Amino acid sequence: MEEKTDNDELPIILPIEDVLDLHTFRPKEIPDLLDDYFSACIGLKIFSVRIIHGKGKGILKKRVHDILKKNSMVKSFKNAPMEAGSWGATLVELKRD
Image: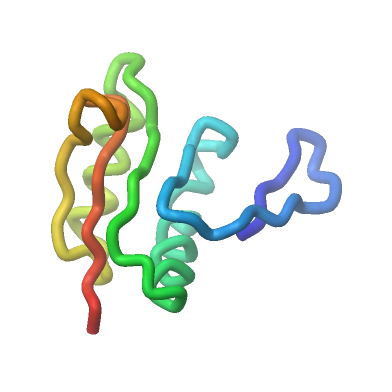
């Protein structure tokens, strides 16, 4: 997965893991980013992922949840437990088919 730097230099390649921290991405990049990330996870047989959106005022969390509700690859999602980020992160179960 690629992350663009602030000055649009060459993208940085990120490994696909079961955690995605959204803090380094621009808000407008998040819909396509999540779509690409979920596709890559499913291809690697990673079906449980944690999305870190941070706590803040909850704006990014709401946006992420709105995207998850509409994404056909998402089976379910919920707030992370306290030890995994509490309401600053969301656990997502991806469909296996």
